[in-house]
Length: 192
Image 1: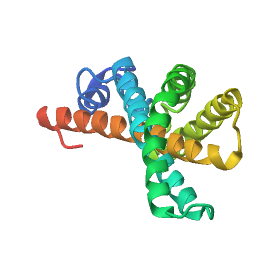
Image 2: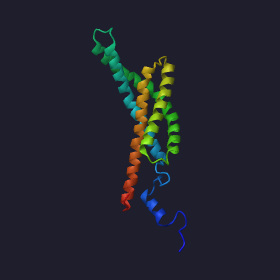
Image 3: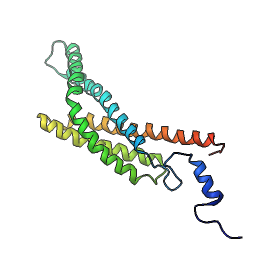
Image 4: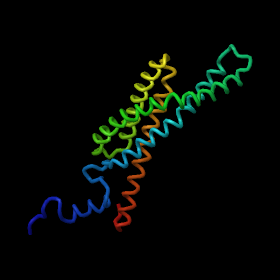
């Protein structure tokens, strides 16, 4: 009896069945992804940042207003400053975040490609969170430098929110893709 050809036989068949039909993930590349999955994650990361950053910045504004000793009404001043911060931040951040989405998207694609053979989700979260922090730092440094600000304390919320948004975008998209693979595998009648 001769050995089966490489890539054929029951072992290869069970790998194809294990990862389902229509998925880019294989035993060798368990974290591979499609362009659609990538675009979904990048879009979600951008949207999460767009929604979270103005709110975080408003909290910073409220705290700054409360700590300002020059006001006779620190609560009213801080709330007004917080509300103004939401609108100003949302309007002023959009061009910078679109630029960060393009540059960050290229880097995220390369990072995802480099990590597609790494099955440990924690490594991916750490790597994408770090990428988000770097992109957030660069984008805020350029934006605040261009706008005449640039204090590191002002930039820290952008870095933190960017790190969390990119990690969240990756996590949500990866979880969704891996669940779809598992559902396809179960639908084929095979236990994973």
